[in-house]
Amino acid sequence: MPENLLKPVELRQMSAEQLSLTLRDAARSLFQLRFRTTSERNQIANETKALKRYIARIKTIQRERELQLAAQERTA
Image (tube, rainbow, N blue to C red; front, side, top):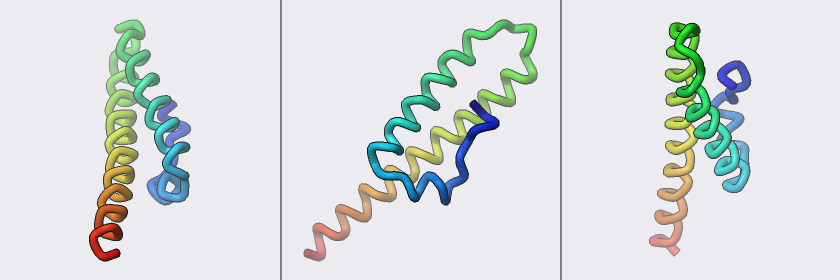
C-alpha cells in the first residue's frame, strides 16, 4: 500500500465517502502489516510509518471539512 499513497491534494478532491473508504483501506493495510513476518523488519517499519502518516493525513482532511461545515452553519 505505501507505494499507492495519494497526495494531500488528491485526498482533498475526494468526496467524504471516498475519503472514509480510503481511510478504512489504509487502516486495514496497517493492521495486516503488523502481522507480517519479522524477517522483513526494516521494510515493515518504513511501511508502518508511511501508513500511519497517511491515516493521520486523511483524518486531518476529514476534520478540516467538519470544521468548515460548523463554521458555515454558525454564519448562516
